Amino acid sequence: MCHECTPIGFTRGISYCGCRFRRFLSPEEEVKLLEDYREQLRREIAGVEERIQELKKRKE
Image (cartoon, rainbow, N blue to C red; front, side, top):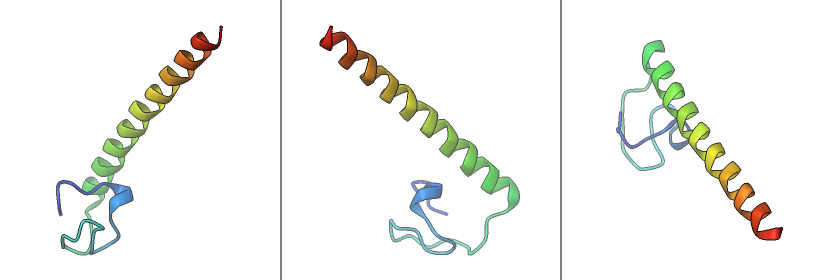
């Protein structure tokens, strides 16, 4: 599997980046991918919250 692919960036067998990998992930691999993706989402949420606070401060 391409190390650049994320759960959103691939389907079973062919990734959107064009790489090929084996058709199925082991449960352990899928858990790892989902945990990594969850962490990316947490960081994204933190960034959104920060931006909201910046905009609210600017408004005051």
